[in-house]
Length: 393
Image 1: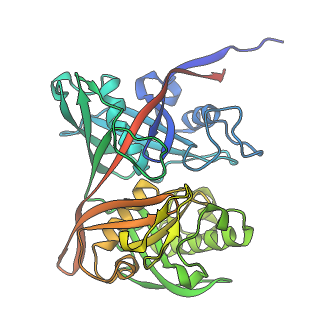
Image 2: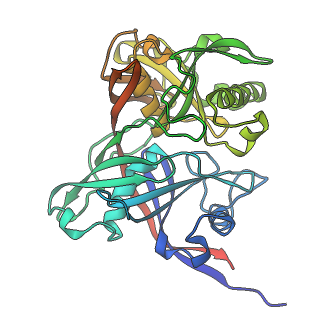
């Protein structure tokens, strides 16, 4: 019996924000995987180590959480005024599929550094020192991200003193601008509020009927009040992720919210669309102890937010959900804005399980519709390992 050797593919393992994933230059992928389809999905599943019924991804690069079961493909952009195209694949841990329906805001911070280090950016656009401006086309949702990447001696600066709650060690700050972040989701008509309302009454059989803000910004997100679903807003992962009834409730909310937003046509479709929409619950500020043991004072935050990702409570906050939070906070009348005091604001600092995060958004109303020109936040990124990944041939 003959055995095929493993395939060897150039790759970089990177942390971006509070996530990490395997990054590829499109041209380095096997020819069959350079185009969307079954071959690409099969390759990425095997790289990450999915599907894994043990939910550990031992035989792959994944870390068995929604924050670490991720892949990124970057290429030179064919679009005017853009440097690179960025495609994000959220790999299911225990099921055989890759979800391409949304972006990863955290890994967005690593795209610019990867592009520069991989030679995908024209040398004339990289200063000897200062910041390189990388114009990124986010191919999953058709949006532009501007990354300001710190440069020292002509190379990407990765070390620094910027601290990000949810990341143990400091690093260099990467500022991200998400331009016109309202997501153009199929079936949602490109509207920031697909139902036309800032607040809806969402009916979820077996759970109840409660207020919800359904928004497409950064990533489609369903915001609900913590108290309406039996929580206070200071919960940590252990309070929810070990409770099967709670996880089933959140999945029911997610499925019915997705249907209401026009993201799926049937409730059953939610099973194959795990990455979007997200579900988050909000509350007014309160004192709590973050997962690191760090005390968070109510006086230092504008509101509390906890968010679900791939069926589990996130350990910090997804970058795209942070964009949704900043956007909703800037629009008077949303549940997020009301939890933050109901005042007009261009920035908000919220408490999450690992600490706090500040995100800004510029909102304006035109012809009765709200528009957000851009959302801004800072993350950090670092190469963890580079070389080749190997997958059985």
